[in-house]
Length: 142
Image 1 (tube, rainbow, N blue to C red):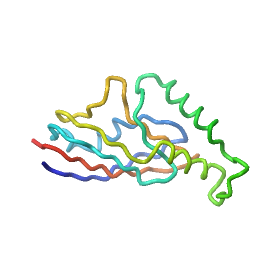
Image 2 (cartoon, rainbow, N blue to C red; image 1 turned 120 degrees about the horizontal axis):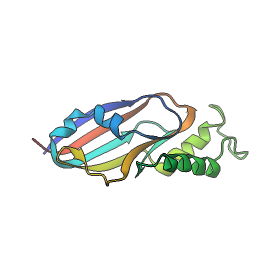
Image 3 (cartoon, rainbow, N blue to C red; image 1 turned 135 degrees about the vertical axis):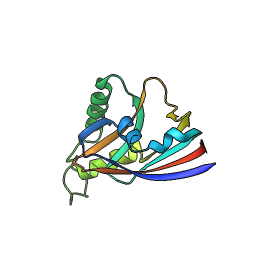
Image 4 (tube, helix red, strand yellow; image 1 turned 180 degrees about the vertical axis):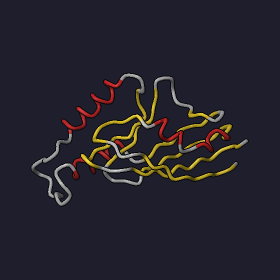
């Protein structure tokens, strides 16, 4: 068993729900050597999240963003953390709701995701900037 670790930089994205599966894979060529194992992704930010969900119909991403923005609106009058803007505290809550980490099985050098599954970055800030992941791959390498 071998353990590899890499840092992945996701390009800055506008607020929304973004499919990032290919962006992650393009920066993790080591995965092709993994016969079977686990990839742990840890997002190093408190105002964005990670999720796995439907990767085919973009309406899913739009509907997800619409729902979470309705659930946790910018400028909620009871928030006291306002120093970084009206979108900051809602972004922290969205990050907690979705979480900052995923563990994905790897089989024969590929993510063992379901047919319609992809990895999402939930960008909760209006201008969140580039996002960084720590990717830890553990498994049997060939």
